[in-house]
Image (tube, rainbow, N blue to C red; front, side):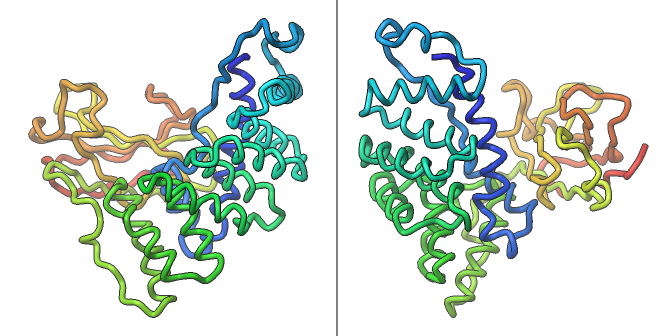
Length: 333
């Protein structure tokens, strides 16, 4: 099967997931923090599956590379007809029907996927996500909640299953359970995402009449961590093109390659960015070994790492690892 089959489905679903799947919590978290968490948790459907089989066993016409969504769906329908125990194919067919607007066909295919892989945490979690996207109110159903519970029973470390189960519990006002479901994630996440989740955990705890948790529950920052507050004016954020990206980087004096860098879309950008050795583009250069560095933020209108004339740049600020700086991105050059 052509990789394009999965790219066509996956690219369409990324937009749906980010726009819809986490909507139940948007009122309390805000779009930017919510999307930042989605990225950190892998909420988007990040894997496009390659179905393994013998091409000669398929209809020769269907073995040709798919070039449209209709071709992709035709190949998937042939796949599940000849391999009814292929959970991934059933899951992709459900997702393809979703992107094509055939919401009524989604759940039957998802149930086939779950029946074919009843203990597979990835399949169960993606099935729950996809079913919630297909629902008119985008709520996680009791059936999907059961899938998520089974996924966590099968793999207690599955972050997305834990995240979505907490959403399902919050939707049902099971606030204490939601907080308890999310708490183990706090020490596993990127600091910025962890801070956003801590706020949501504490909102659930408050609704349950419990005291808030402290920031000590978050993953400890390494000693070299640079705390970078990035101020992006709301008026600028609203007029940036969809492909725009913000790059936050720390460089040694006189060197072009950053020792630490992160890339965000405008909606993903948290109020505080943490740069550490884990953000080194090259293994030879480490923030902890760099001494004094220059930190800057740059908005690329094209979303590329290569600087361009229409980029918007903050002033460079010097600091040592472990320090804190504030960067202001201007509205115009």
